[in-house]
Length: 130
Ligand code: MN
Image (cartoon, rainbow, N blue to C red):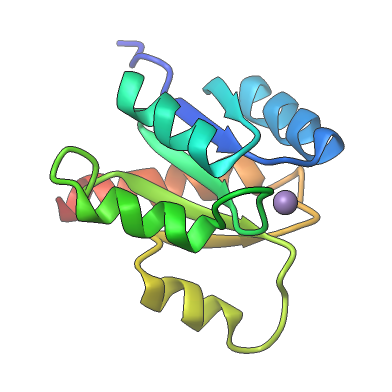
């Protein structure tokens, strides 16, 4: 009873961060797609919606909160599981991002020991609530 690998779209403009997160997720059994800009993420999602979007907030074009707003505004993508992955680590950021409508929040640098399991938990929670 092997479930299909969950598809994760990783949106990250920093090469090193993107490569690390991709490797960690692939080792945990995710099918990983990547984008390096907000527009690239929107295009990839329109082409093939993933099971989960891991979204950097600071991107070179549209920031992650704006990308999320556009996804939530469209019926086809409103229900996507979208997790913020951000270097912002100030008090209040978690609340700010969850209030913005993210399903979850992970800080960078990612913890390679727990990152993939955390993402799976967000996916499972999302599935139960929808
Ligand atoms: Mn960035």
